[in-house]
Picture (tube, rainbow, N blue to C red):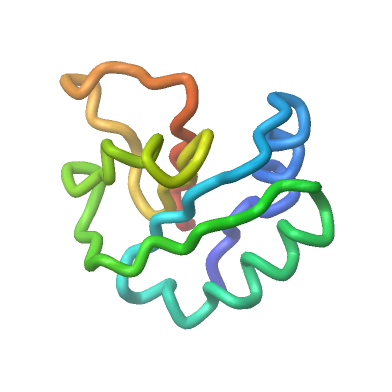
Amino acid sequence: MFDLKLQYIATWVRDRGYTSVALQLPEGLKLRATEIVDFLTQETEANYVMLGDPCYGACDLFTNYSCVADALVHFGHSPIPSQGVDPKVLYIEAD
């Protein structure tokens, strides 16, 4: 089972005061989407948007997340240094 660091994500969302957060999961983790959203909704006051488009790694990052949310949590891969750093994007490596 993957450690998705849900408590860490909840703390990150609360500490920054985000009210809406987009969640981007790779195909293999989308089966856990309801579990993830349920936990984060109970732990924070934010609303969550699950992005449904296929995602095949950090190179497939949804960069227009600000159209739907204050921040983005990208599951499954580490950041690509050449893409720069966006403080409103949290990368969660599924390990």
